[in-house]
Length: 316
Length: 316
Image (cartoon, rainbow over all chains, first blue to last red; front, top):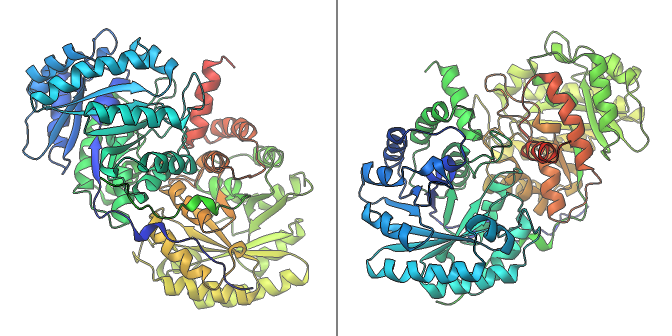
């Protein structure tokens, strides 16, 4: 039998460096049932600042009525050390949130909306058009003060209420958000349904008009596909990956199950492919070990568990 | 900025169908601390036979001294229903094991060795050459009786004792095993260290002389990369994937952490990319739910947890 004709390797065009955008203190902790004390959050963020991370999302300036876990946003923002070379960011739902964030010393903020009307309505109680109009009141004033604005688009790959999401809606949002002046758009697989061929399809549509550095990958690992999806995005040249320490961010209905892509696992995969992240994996594991105790449950990160096992066997 | 030049999509050449080779009853249960009663194993295998699986590895005819969990190999092999269209296989370490397996009704057996000398020595107490010599006493006689023989190569992507494994050693073993007459070679990432670029590199080397259908992918998810690695192999045209129900097979040092790639997660990813497996995901989840109770711990499969959560919320 003759040898098969193989497709071109993805791995000849991998980027040399990928930026990990750590969302554990925000996207992770906001989904935890147990409230983590403010001092512990600050210790976590200060620890993360020493792992080599350059982007850490620390909290959300939303109404504490909606996310009580993050009601200490101002205290966290004022309490952390600000290490040179590290960008500390937070979510802001509107102008008031942005002003509060800036007053607390934030220089990087992020706005958020959904690609599906029903999810957006349930999440922020506005239509998508109303949400975009509200963004205009945030992005311009922020940029005038030299504050950078990122945007999150949720439910890019599927909506818990509407099911499939038309790529054309995502394209339209990316156009509008870029026109508003956000510096980067993070494409969220909020419910963790994406599979690699879909990611390839969606990203190619967006990369037809949007440079890679203006997009970020944001996958939840609800069904185990996050790393495979990230592989596809990185192979397409996207160099920002959102992830959460330990895989924090699990759904309260299925503890330990469905968090964000785990920072340790993403970094292990990238380093294994010769992609630099600037991160120290053992330093991340040290922090995960403490955070697991605070949140009161096992963390989903596989690398974290494997390294803990190795440490146990080596007796430290 | 002009739009980037992207690499060719992997997803235009995906195979239409992939065969899942279920190893949960063997590779999964042999690593469990709790002994599963023979009747439960038989119920598990009979259940798996109704999910659409065509290949199920049911046990191992090794010395019970080494793997007490599978000391009931003959009883399992004799006790199961043999459903038409399903291949039931087992591991055999030598001629004696093969004879016992055939006497118990087995028509598919598998031999095993490691790509690294130290791991092979620790695992089977022979050198690799001695192991290959012993295979010759199994494969020929098996084939004369119409029994198919598969081979497992462990530590293809890394060895816990020797570290990196030279691809040339794997190439050499694949040549020798094909010459012996095995019908397929399963390439094991025994300790779950592989990353996608390495998988791409190793498989391209082997596919330069070996047809895709003679190779199988066998990844452990110790560091979270199993699905990304499987994606690479499937995109290279390999159409047999080993996996274990629920992700069974975790290391006793880190419960729930490091099993085989989970059948449910692999199937979810493949179906999401339009690849047929013939499997019914909900039927798999039903069996995982029972097996989780037998082994006494949570199963690592993410899809399994997500589907359980959905069922809970829907009240059944």
